[in-house]
Image 1 (cartoon, rainbow, N blue to C red):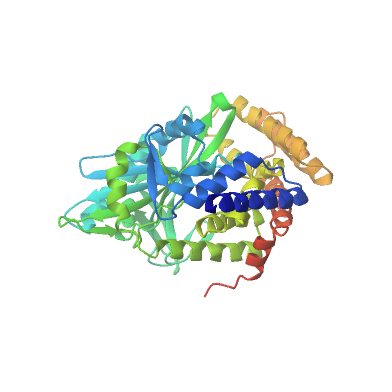
Image 2 (cartoon, rainbow, N blue to C red; image 1 turned 90 degrees about the vertical axis):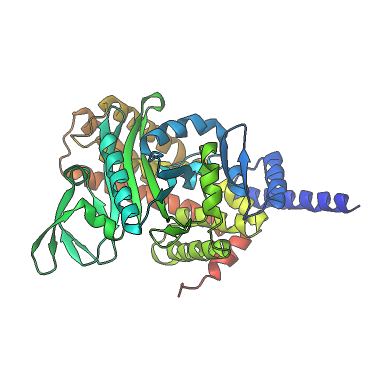
Amino acid sequence: MANQTGSKDAQKEVEQIIKTASALGVEVDEVDVAQWLTAMAAADAMSWQVDEDAGIYGQEITLLDFDKATLDRYRRIADIVQLPDLPNVETAVSLAGSAAQGVIQRYPGDCDYFERVNIRADTREEACSILADLIRDKALDKYMGPDYRLIEVKFGTWDADVIKGDWEIRKGSPVSWAPEEVRKGQMTVLTVSGETWDVPWTYGCLDPGWCKMDWIIAEPERGRVVNASNMLDVTWEAPDGSIVPLDGFIDPYFQEVYLEADSVPLFAKLAQHVSPKALQEYVQQITGEVYKYTRKHVNYGKAAKRIYNIFRLTGRHQAAALVRELFDEPAALLYQVWSILDTLEDADSPDSGFDRELLVQQTDKLIEDVIETCEGPLETKIVMALIRLRDHITGRLDLGADRSELIRSSRATVEQLVNEYFQNKLLGIADVREFIDSLEEPA
């Protein structure tokens, strides 16, 4: 009798989801939703598992949203961005963000990777020095090739206010290195008193902080270029076996799909050091981000992604299922258009080395996507801007300094459309609307 009651309750839940989705104008696959709800009910937010057939692993809930059909593609890109294992260095590379949620987010913008890097050394200073060599060696090895180009490296934390070019950078900000600066092993900035300061690469060893590497990668077989980033979570393993995070915090594992089963021993070792309050702290952190994206820097597309993660991790599965469906709608494709505009700006630089025809193909596809997705005056504005951008890439038109402004304004227009779509849909879901209305500014 209990099973029959549970089955009836589940059916009612599915029917309610379909009814609400219909009112929102969103299509729902009844079988898919029912299977997802069943799997979510059985999943443990703190547990992780290994998919032996695919050779991947991660948190149970995250694996439910990963599209294994894309695995070969993401492993090929990982070969470019991931740091290597060495006798004293263990790594575990994973996909994060929308790329790890390919089943629902069919239009991911970038390829975001997350790599755990554990360095065995006698001292913290030695571990930081090894990390400096690891990052720079990777940057120089994958500086530029036929299908990739390094665009930025973050390594180190400023211990004083500085001025770099036209930018004032505050103490505590990450140190961002341009590719040529990485190659030289040095950058030049001004102190607040106006003195020239030649900053060596090894300055990053003092406080590595937020370490991240970014590339533009061409995929000729897909007719596109993408941004691929690798964020590093670095730990030092001392001779006594203690684990010390170099940025002061071991990240939890609520968003990653790990691509190499051989790295399970490292992951299992580090998972033991994740805070027992990690789930609570993670939900609190991204709830603060939802407040930011619905109150201050309004961006309901980014808010939707975080609300989905909050709801699926805290047992609000019916509302999570509805938010999940929003990412499969054609309008969500504009999120990808928005991201690719930035990528095209980097890839279209004179020294990028990318095939211009590939960039033209991608721009043509963006025009097609916008036409299929939008209507009205905003569609015309975006399409005309993309046509001008394509003519610039082909050499028919020289936009000069106007190129960046054209991309910026087009991106802002697309962002407006994405924001309107997700805002209207999210506020049409009662549980989500109540959640947003209840948010308070983080302390």
